[in-house]
Image 1 (cartoon, rainbow over the protein chains, first blue to last red):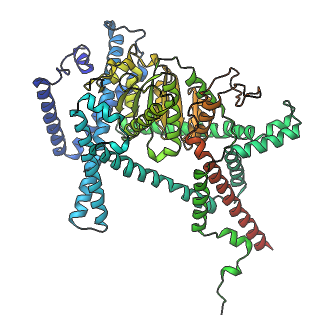
Image 2: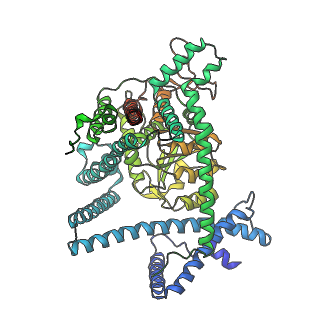
Length: 311
Length: 326
């Protein structure tokens, strides 16, 4: 079980070296070189063998989370507690390793982001070099990508080198008095990226309106029920409609709280639709998706899914 | 020779079916824009889920710590920004410390930090000026975690391991481990947080509920699109409070202004809820009404227009069908 302890990093100082020390730097560089060597070796491996390697890591990672879910977890474990017996040893190992696996999953996802950026740069550089159709947009993309990265990195570096008092002083300034690096950062992030992001999404409103006008038609009984429910729920979001509708019902019921008519208040109808149809409907859909994801997960985990992973 | 059909030869039903797209867009543009320049007060009845959220936030112990998982950017600013503003105002006024993290979008931490800066500016400019919420002492930035599922599992197992390597600047300007900050004093497990609050326009709230709801109270502020799905978890009790969409923002702002079950000048409560009877005081006299109040009439106009065009289209269909049958 020493190997398991080592992997879980419990009581092991192998992975933690003093901050800023040469040993730490050596380990970082060494690990990076080792990582690249493994990656290179993997790329040189024939596709069939590569698939086995990928399956091994997939199975191992999946097995960890399956065991974490199914294996009895240690109850009231205190710091420094020693495990007794195989069952407890495994449960301690699983608990201790969660952090490593979680960290690895974060690193892998971050690598995917990096891979995405790399792929984007490669595709657009090729497009630019060959002057393919709409290559001008590739120029815009690359210039924007590098500009925002450079400006952001410059801002981070500038603030890192700043004295705390200076940083505090800048924090109190109004935007007009900001130093250039902060203005540039603000212009790129809030002035351009965020504003364009918001503008792009606001355009959706126009498409929704156009689609609702052209597609939301009462072509069948089901469509009519759907339309009526949608209109009632939409009306319930309007405070004014809700007020007048409920007042009308109140006047019909004569202010009697026990009257059956009160069930026809807009809030009650909308609540009935949400709780009796919408929530169970969505729950059923989620349940179906869950079963599908479980089946797909099992296929991937056990290496039964053959698609992907080719040259 | 066939006579070419002109617009004039169209029946009324056919005309209703062929409103040009640019007309719809123009009408939407004007109907959605003018309320922004002249806000109209709209009556409101806070939903039960919003009232629960407000009560939970107002009952958090003063000085306790929460984690805010901020997973929104300006793509959902219309709703999420108002929710985040309301949340920050409540937490800051009640001296609740918070750690800020994100799992869904790399832009989210920067967007959230910008808003905190603006709310702090608002507090400095208030009359009388309010205490600035200081980074490190009152809140810390936990950063971005690219993998929501893995991070959720980590958090459920060990908060100290999850955030152990995260650093933020202390008052001296040097980067220290966030767990050494006053925010995380005495917090070694996610169960010791007073709440885990998710502000999002994505499914990240579902991932958090699946992994953390057994250990910590989860509160949600989601967009209108995510509302119906998230409502599932509120109805089942896994989510203790939920503000959904712009209506949710307006609910929060009106409750912050007038409280819930609190008697007004005429002795009658201004806002009531069927969920609980105890009065929850708001923050009378402070800046409470903001984006929700400004945008709600725009939402009214947009929904009204949506209903109108659906009705026009369907009346057109009915009239055309009647004509064909005749």
